[in-house]
Length: 587
Figure (tube, rainbow, N blue to C red):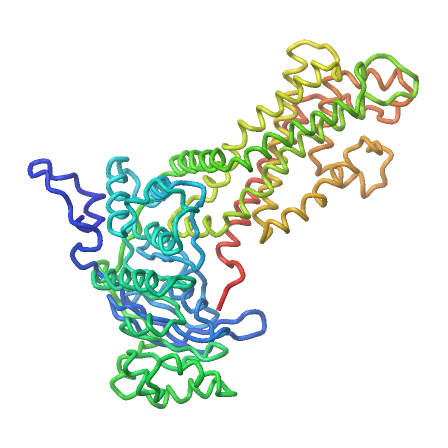
């Protein structure tokens, strides 16, 4: 393959029919120079990086090294533009880096965890990644060419149909690297790329990174393995607390620290009770030539050719379609999740049939409030289905979202795709719920218009609950936290919907809270459709509900649709906020 940008912007040479060179053997890329200038970082009141300054030349392979708590990952993320420093700056080719210039500007980042969908085969994973990352207008044929060449270059072609979860550790790491290589980055950042790999596989990964650097790509990685450090052009040692202890070649590091084995440097760094001493020693040691080459405090002026222009990502509509298809495929391949999504509504429907007798809407005792109870639990079932579907949708792939958002993924398209893939499932389970309850005489005989209104009410409520679940899923940090959020989100919907205690009989704070609960509006709308307003006049047991069921359907539907819109927008806002602030980091 010639440079991948040529593959994506120029038509194939039909006259010669020549096959492009492979990705890693293409002509040298225009590598990026990186300057860290006085970078410091605070975590609350604690300073975790102290005035770190060093430079990386284009096409260098650089290792960030240090013990636990030294700030390796923090420096890596700041260099990649994933988080802003508290003080100082990072410059790529003389231009100051920030979050707006990092996205889509030729920066690749591979975190320590293999952040790709484990359910999909490797080829499908890369196909979706390519179509999301490659410039708008790239044809499916060219995207497929890029995927195949990348798999061949990383020696993954024979595993193309193997699910990612079935790949070996080294293959998964190469697959994670492949996702970033699809867009041909000029700078490549990797957090512990050899962690957990055996020595042979680790050496293979480092050889791959060495080949990338040979192409001119600037490669920066964190590591704790001396064998990996020795294969690098430059090593940056960080002492405890984020103090810069050394920056130079591995050979210079041996002379500076007076060791034969670079593993001994860790002992020397740890033995110093005041880690800032290492930063002072290094500042004093730097010779005039090194100091002259150090980055200046003012950014340099660079021409447009020195930067990689941001590629225009696919449109939001295109991204939505790709994400919806990928979500559906991931869902279909995860049989346990699919069984839960379809099985839990069936279980709830069966319990409702066991709870309520047939003919609940027939005239019974004067104190009978059974119809209102059945309608309430019918409304809550719709809420419960939507909420539980949404709660685990985002938290389990937040790291994947962060990775894709950095390359230009639309947050709106991502949230809309989550709704789009679950909407058909909610449609099916809602129809089954109504059909079973009517077939077993738990709901009264009525025309299609009545059951159409019931269906619309439940669907609008379920989608509003789905967006509430997505918001909670975006806000929590783990699946266990999402599970804890479930009862906290459900209890208010049960207590303040107006069924257990009518809204008119609630204390003022309860009436105010009920205004923001979708289950209240669904309960009232369902009751209106089933004629509960007439029963409040004939059954003393239901008179407490007053005119709760007298309102029109349109008002209730509009309120529920408004909840959906607000919650979906809030989900997008939380996602963007979490991408800016990040998750808890390893050092």
